[in-house]
Amino acid sequence: MRYFITTPKGLEAVLVEEGMRLGATPVRKAPGRVHFDADRNFLYLSNSFLRTANRVFIELISGHHEGLEDIGSAAVSIDYTPYIGPGMSFAVRAERVGSHDFTSIDVGRVVGAAVIESLLESKGFRPRVDLRSPDVEIYVYVIEDEFVIGVNTSGESLHKRRYRVISHPAALKTTLAAAMYYLAGEPERLIDPMCGGGTIPAEAVQIGLGIPISRYRRGYMYRKFPLYSPDEEAGALSSYKPRKRYVVPWCTDISHKSVYIAIRNLLSAGIEQRVTLGIWDAEDPLLYELSEADAVITNPPYGIRSHNPRKIPAFYRGFVRAARDGGISTIVCITPRVRDMIGAVRDSEGVVEGIIHVMHGGLRAGILKIRF
Image 1: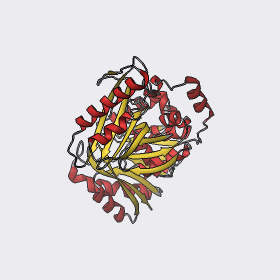
Image 2: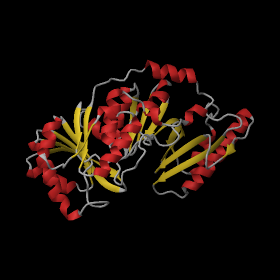
Image 3: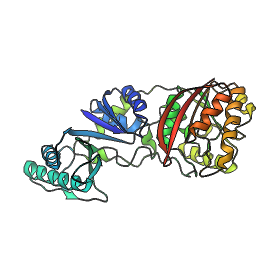
Image 4: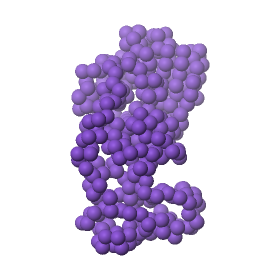
């Protein structure tokens, strides 16, 4: 089967590595999307264990087009019966990038009509259209002269883990937190000295223990498909043995409120006993010495939602210097203030090994990997 999986732009290479761990073969990458070849078990494994994915789609058809008519012709040729049965409702979601003489609304209208036509001709029933809460979502991506049509197997985005019961004002997306842990080399001992709501330690522990994201979710859209087999799903999940390690994270913050939020979220995730929590200044080298961490993974403040922006460069210098003096050899951090962080690293005679550009809280940011 062919799948395509969406991810925050910039994390495509990380998603490729995750997909390969689950037995999938990467076919191609596109901005915010990776296409894989895999068997049916991957449908269940990907939705439970891909931590940098937003949604998993079964690819129905893809190709090039010269206009809206070509997309409609391709859509009407698809067999929708494995996904839409009698009495079920569907919706078409369309996204378009580039210059075209049609809109996303036009794409949705044409493909929606094609779905109805296909099922009427092949099975003799007309599926209901429900744009608000459909049983099945057909997605159409049109990028310049290319298009891909797929069926959403995940439902709501996989980044919504549901263990976060209190949202931090500067919350980090779970997908970004997981990616940062992977980029740090999946250390067994780590510290987040500006932990906010505790997302980075939470993702690290769950990755280490092989906890599926399905533990915290309400359900998946694929379970409504006619092709769905509960026994097949149970077999796929029981046969998969994720590699496990005992991850020991420290989660500290100078804000009492942030540490309280982190405690509540870690309690909700059921992993609070595996995390060392505390109130501490990120500019204190003793913090890093006591943690004995292999890496710092953190989302430092950047002076937009909180903190004085003029003080950020000096704070970054103090933080980086303290981590270095405390024996830390690796820092992975995310910030829109990339130049300020690079300057702080240079002042401490460190090296920025790489930068991945992502969107974070509506801002262009960089994930930096720093070595000493």
